[in-house]
Amino acid sequence: MRQLLLNKQLVPREFNKVARRYDFATYLSQGYQEDLDHSATLMGLSGSEQVLDLCCGTGKSTLACLQVLPHGTVTGVDNSAGMLEVADSKLQPEVAEGRVTLHLGDAMELDFPDASFDAVFMAYGLRNMPDYGRALEGISRVLRPGGVLCIHDYSLAPGWWARLYWAVLGYGFIVPFCTLLSGSADIYLYLIRSVLTFPSPQSIEQLCTQHGFTQATTHHHRSWRRPILHTIIARKG
Ligand SMILES: C[S@@+](CC[C@H](N)C(=O)[O-])C[C@H]1O[C@@H](n2cnc3c(N)ncnc32)[C@H](O)[C@@H]1O
Image (spheres, rainbow, N blue to C red):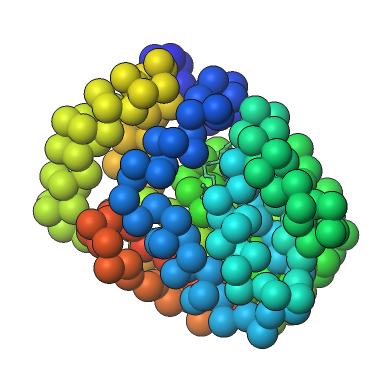
């Protein structure tokens, strides 16, 4: 695993290991679904759009998108077959109705046609990309002009307080607790480290504007994640 601390190519293998217990772990993480639901509302959709849920995992973010899309569709993409299997079994009715389609694929190599989505929702995904700029360029390509991008991720507020909060929470609680629960420490150690090295919300806004987006704004959450979780909303120019 000590390799995983730096190598994001190993991420899908690690998510495969914890896929079956992922929903239980996040269920215990108070407010996890509510924070996703809040970010989905921030996209300001009318309800009939085609949304790409990048790094959809076990489908919790897909459910958040569906909630704001009574007449729309969601395409979920993830590169962990194990996580997608859980999403597929959970979302059977929506898949059968054609409201949800799930694809095994890499968010860095999207093969959808240009401008095929009205919105892209990416929850806890961008941080796992080996090259943030290239990932944003790919997202921009598949978004229609004026389409909305929502990045929901652990990104630390400026200053020492949020870093200390995350380090204590991560190494003191998340890693020991989730390791006990899932039987694997690796992905949780990676989580703590990847957040400590991920850009601040303001830097993500700048990255968005450097890669074809306008009007990037940061939104906060009311939960205990307030110092560490932010949602960036941007529009394709
Ligand atoms: C922390 S989970 C988040 C899942 C879901 N979005 C949610 O909010 O619960 C991150 C997901 O990103 C996926 N992932 C990481 N890197 C990826 C990549 N390059 N392409 C596609 N999926 C990726 C992982 O397999 C994992 O399922």
